[in-house]
Amino acid sequence: MVFSATDVVPLSQARATLSELADEVKAGAEKIITKNGESYVAIIDTRRLDYYHRLERERIHLLLIDDASKGLDDVAAGSTRGARSALAALKRHRAGKAAD
Image (tube, rainbow, N blue to C red; front, side, top):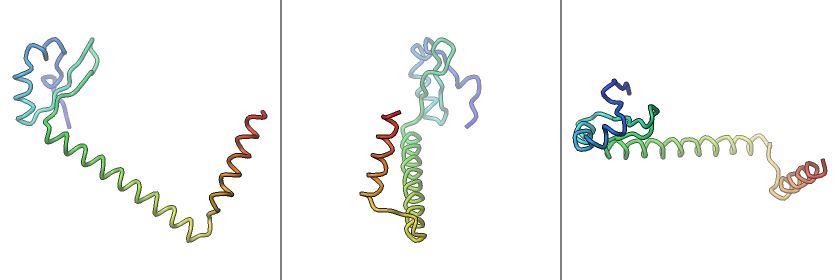
């Protein structure tokens, strides 16, 4: 999303005009509130926030599916080892680092 200069509001101004800012956000704008000249927080519509959260959950699910697919490819290629073997190798590795 592209922000205009009117979408960036100093915190002091936001305090004085919160109701108006909320109406603008409800109408579709997003506001960036600044503090000491740097971005601080954003004001967005709750529906848009819910949408962003759904997108993030979907992204996480896609990443999990991708990881599971890679794991299944490893199993099919025979590139796996048992958990006991992997844990033993990890312990040996950590013990070697501790000795250094």
